[in-house]
Amino acid sequence: MMNDRPALHKLIRELQQLIAALCCILVSSAVVARAEQPFMTVEGDTRSTAWWVLAEFHPFTTEVRGIPVGQIRKGWCKATEFRKDLIPRQFLYEGGGDAMEASQRSFALEGHFDGSTMKQVALVGVYEDCKGARGRFLMILDLPTGGKPRIRLLEAVKTPHQYAALSLQDDNTIVAWTCMDCDNFEKLKWNSKQRKFVWLPPPSDE
Image 1 (cartoon, rainbow, N blue to C red):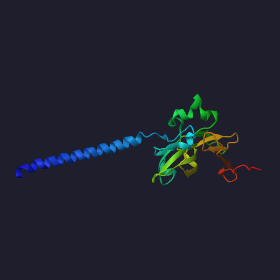
Image 2 (tube, helix red, strand yellow):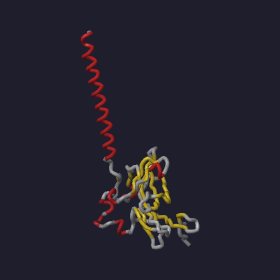
Image 3 (tube, rainbow, N blue to C red):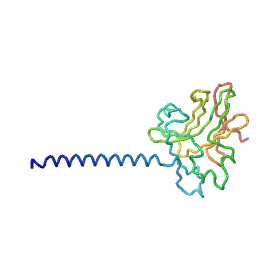
């Protein structure tokens, strides 16, 4: 029996190494599967319900325009800016035309929204906090020449329907949409007296 101990110990070590290798393979497979998950998934019948209502977005980046998500808002772990190349073409180019271009909407707008010489960008995206809750966000960033972007405005709302887009009116009013083809929007404009961007009240029905 004494002579069998080295062989037994060797067998145990080999089993331990095999188990460790299997664990690494399982973890790596899970990481790869997560990394390969599409940014947007759709479950349901898009013939009866609009795709932007059915769409579920999965943020996968840890910074937006070079700003770490933890600096954007405490408690966020991921945030991804909406981009056309992240949306399946069959939805944005249904019928062969560019639906966003036809409606004059975009996921990001550049301009001088506060009337200053500083260029700004307004953009929309989806975030995921460190507890797994997701929602959409709108940011306005200053884009200084040769410097890092600076957050001027951040609006975020936790919601299962994260789709958002933007359009710009001639007077630099930013229109935030939560759909591709509907009247669900809010308007954001620089208020020179208050020295900040403010949401405009909805128009009166009277």
